[in-house]
Amino acid sequence: MEAKLNETEVYRVLVVEDDDIDRVAIKRALRNQSVEYCLVFSYLMSEVKNLVENHSFDVVLTDMNLPDSAGLLTIQTIVELFPSIPVIVLSGTDSDEMALEAVHSGAQDYLHKNYLADASLITRTIRHAMERFQLKLGDEKRQEKALLSAQYDPCTKLPNRALLFDRMDQIITNAKRDRSSFTVLFIDLDEFKNVNDCFGHDAGDKVLISVATRMQHMLRESDTVSRFGGDEFVVILPNSADCLSIKKISQALIKAINLPVIIDGQSCSVGASIGVSFYPEHGVQPKRLIKNADLAMYQAKENGRNKVQVFSYDLY
Image (cartoon, rainbow, N blue to C red; front, side, top):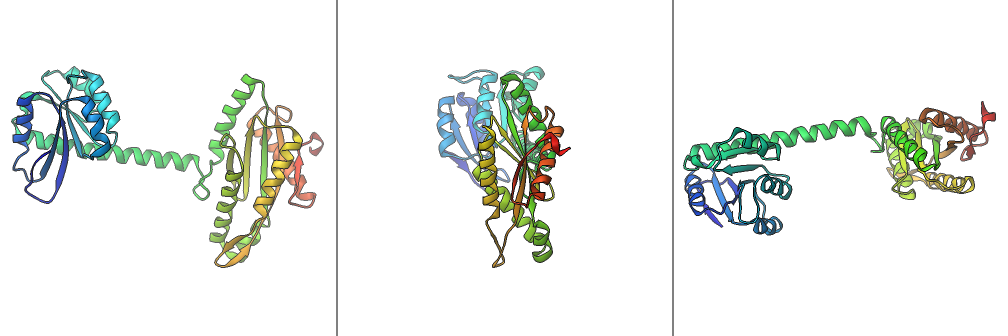
């Protein structure tokens, strides 16, 4: 490791280059700058792979052609090894087409080796590459946040109604292909309004989160637990078992939901009424299956709450 430090800020730079002349040029160019550059040099891709585990870097400068790696494969490998930092490609080929291919492969910039003696150009390239990369990461985080907001309930972090219907479409496609069935549970919390009235809406949110967590812990990873709205949840059980088994699962969910939640030292609890519909017996479209499970849920409430009711066309 070689370093020429002048100020407090340090940019850790990995230079992947097997040409001694180019290495010296980079070293000289990054000396006596307004920021400090701590340089680590590597000749081989195999060395780089070992460095990943033991070092952290702010930027990578890499030649395209190494003794054990060449061309775009070098760039792609470096980008995969360092997905969270910018990569700048060094090349002796002055080609716009090659520069574009390098960027498409994940590099932030492309620098011709004829300019390695230009210290201001190299430092500016590094700075701009880092700035662009941070903007890119920011854009990706904003897009991820927007996607989460569009598909997940902000309170319980469960899939929302939109994502539920997307998943049901896929589950129906799989069920048609495999000639299999699945189950829809429509769950409505009993006495939830009393929690909001007596303890406040923050307490109500804590109860919703607790209910969501309990259901997720009880069900399989392949099952979908979603917040349909308010105090309503919809659960999808792919490749589910017979009616008796589904009733047992539903009763276990009710038992878990019934457990008290401690809020500010006080105990509060809710119940649950569950309606059940089966694909394809009770519908072949998401809205129909959910509507029929919803009808069954209302019948469960009429039966005394904390009950399970399987849909029947007699409910219409």
